[in-house]
Length: 66
Image (tube, rainbow, N blue to C red):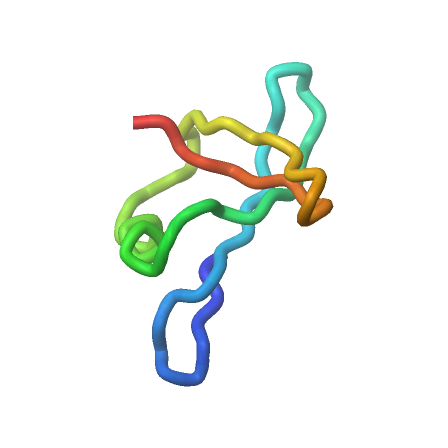
């Protein structure tokens, strides 16, 4: 899901996915507005990405591979 600001610009994204161990994870999508817009135009179901925990922001972050 991509969230937009009041100027209709992609601001942040959230994804729910399955980890390699079968557990599910919720993560914020990493990237600037242009990358988030690309995610809106691309079918992401079944795509592989990398989830990492950002201790400073205290949240999971996701970046798609490729």
